[in-house]
Image (tube, rainbow, N blue to C red; front, top):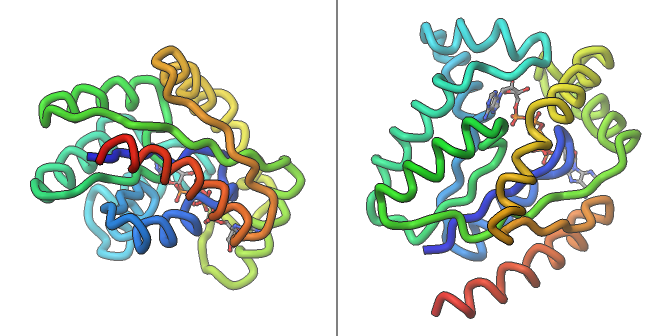
Length: 195
Ligand code: AP5
């Protein structure tokens, strides 16, 4: 199995590139942001609780997102592999994911980190906010709060995987096609090793 974490700050292109990667490599896309937004759209109790955090640009509690990922892993027993987008976002989530994958006799293959300057992140998110209807994209204060959460709570996840030699940086501020080419170079190597 190939299990990829697409890592990076808000607006770095994780969702955009995940859509391209699943088409090419046949992996299953697990985005905790998309799962949470679907809970909110369906007005579930979980969604109502999560929206309080998301509207302020804060992370949702670990146990909520770990539970969602666990159910999705169980629901896809025959997957060729997974692409995790927006998860894990804390060291506790990374440790929980490692345990869930170990139960399935697999592990994270690689973490590819999209590196994009902060002014470009803010520009991309505020631009999307004009049309997306995403409440967390519409105010510069909330966008900046998301970036602060990333530095405080998510950036340490890089060290967790670097310890195992699984963390790689990819230049993320080119065009969508250029970034995809760089990701494919990394993934082709990995897929060739697994065959
Ligand atoms: P989530 O949905 O994960 O959002 P995010 O990571 O904050 O930001 P995005 O998904 O919007 O960024 P992205 O890197 O995917 O970039 P994208 O491709 O969309 O999380 C939202 C919230 O949910 C969190 O704040 C938190 O509250 C909660 N949450 C989610 N997961 C959680 C977890 N595990 N634990 C706790 N809480 C969690 O691109 C952004 C824009 O840039 C788009 O408009 C795109 O078209 C554009 N773009 C992309 N690539 C390029 C390019 N190369 N050039 C120019 N523009 C580009």
